[in-house]
Length: 370
Image 1: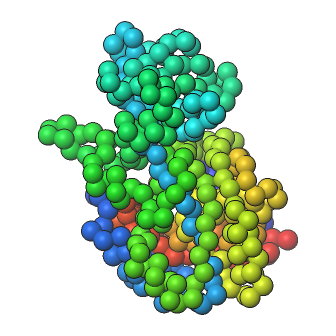
Image 2 (image 1 turned 60 degrees about the horizontal axis):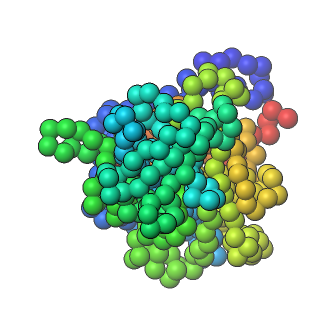
C-alpha cells in the first residue's frame, strides 16, 4: 500500500492495476447470441448480475448513447521475403498513395526497397519504404500493389485475415493458430461498423444486435457515432512502474458534426451521455480536452483525470496492467473497479474481447484533496 499525507490524492503505480485471472475465464468464442452475454451492473455500491439485453430498461428516454462505428480491417497479412523467409504484417493505418503503416514480424528485417510477396503468388506485393512515423518508429511504411491496381482496403479485404487479439487462439488440427474463422469474420465486427481502419474491434459494441438497437429506440434513447480507429497498442501492457513514463500509442479519431449537435442537445435536455466502449471515451474526452473534432490522439486517462463529457460507460473486462484498466479506474473509482473485478472473477464472468460487459457510472470527482 502507498502511504500519503491525509487528504492528498493517492499516487498509483503499475502494480495497482494487476490482478490474477484464471485463464479459463478468457473468452475464446463469442456468446451464441450477441445480446445474451452477461452484464455486470456496477452503477451502485453493490454489483448486480444482469443480461445484456436488460440494458434499455436501465437507461432513460433522452439519454444519448455514443458508439464507435470503426470497421475492423483484415489487417493481418502473411507472405514471404525474396529469400523465402516468412513474414507477417499487421496493418495499423492506411496512408495516402497506396501506402500503409504496419507492424512487421520477421526473423531478419529486410532492407528498405525490398519487395515482399503476400498471400501467395497470385496475391500482391508490399515494398518496404522505411520506418514509420519516423526513423525511430516502431512501425514500417509499405506500398501495397497488385496488377489490377487495387487499393490497400480492397487488397486486405480479399487476402487479409481478421486480426484477432493475441489471447484468442484457434485450433487447426493439432496446431494452435491465431488466424480467423468464418465465425470471427462475422462476430469480431459490430453490426453498425462502417468506416474501415481498426485493427481491433471496439468490443463493448459487439453486444449490440438489431433487436437491442430497436429496443433502445423504443425506449427513447438517442444514438450517435464517432470514429476511432483502434490500434494494436490497445493490447500493449504498460511496462513502466511510474505511469507518467508510459508512451501512449496514437490513434486517429473523428467526431462528426451531427454527433457534436446530438451531444449539445443531450446536455440541454438534461440527458446523460453513455459511451459504448473505452474507445468512445477516448474520442469524446480528446475532443473536449483539445477542442479538435478530429485528428490524432495520445490521450492517457489515469486516476485523477477530469472527465468533461461522459456520464456512463459500457465496457468489457480489460487486461491486467493495461491502459484501459487505468481508464475505467479513473472513471468509476479504483476501489470500486477492483471490487467489481473480484466479483466478476468469483461469478465466472467471461473476460476480454469476446467476453461479457459491465455498466459504470462516473464517480463524483474527488475534491477532498483541494
